[in-house]
Amino acid sequence: MSRPAVTALDFVRDGVEIRGGLVSERDLRLVASEIAVECAVLAKAGIRNLEKKVASIARLVADPVLVGVALELLGGEARLVRALFFDKTPGRNWAVPWHQDKTVTLNSRVKMDGWGPWSEKDGVCHVQPPCQVLDRMLAIRLHLDPCDEENGCLRVIPGSHRSGILKPRDIERIVATSDAVPCIASAGDAVIMRPHVVHSSRKSVSQSHRRVIHLEYSDYELPSRVRWAA
Ligand SMILES: O=C(O)CCC(=O)C(=O)O
Image (cartoon, rainbow, N blue to C red; front, side):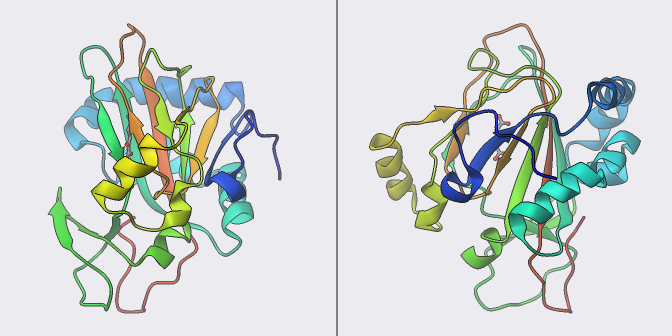
């Protein structure tokens, strides 16, 4: 089902869009309260493979509206490939420089032309795939709190994914010659983006939480000898 975009950003043109109304207020309250209860699990588990550790995230990743958005925008059989949770607070604060998300997580290290370098984090294989894999992916970042420049929202360079995988000096040039857009969102809004849209975020200077459930979907068909880690 198609929902209205809440800003002028357009996923097809810009590789990023903000949509409201994907999750009802009731479901959002339920997820937020379950996540609060599961904070101890989240703190111990880290932020990876959350769909396997946290019931409310397992439910969200299969939510027909969210999966429907992934299907609509990817075009093929979309499936979850990674789930992360971020809670930026004054006490657990961070800034991220301008970058592209260039890695995917797989169940094992298998030699494939054009894939690499490989690394391992929390026991999970990470690898940089060819750009055509990133072109078949999107992230849905569901906001549990209102998010703005004060609490460290994502900042994006619309359309930058169309330049492919960029070297650091090309990222610098694109950032210097483009207008960055802050992804200002209400609780319940979702920032939907291609992983290789150039993005960054600043530290929060607010007392509020900035909780985000980050779900990545893809309709890319992996070779049969390897599987997504999720
Ligand atoms: O949520 C943030 O502050 C930054 C996240 C980010 O840059 C990423 O997921 O690559």
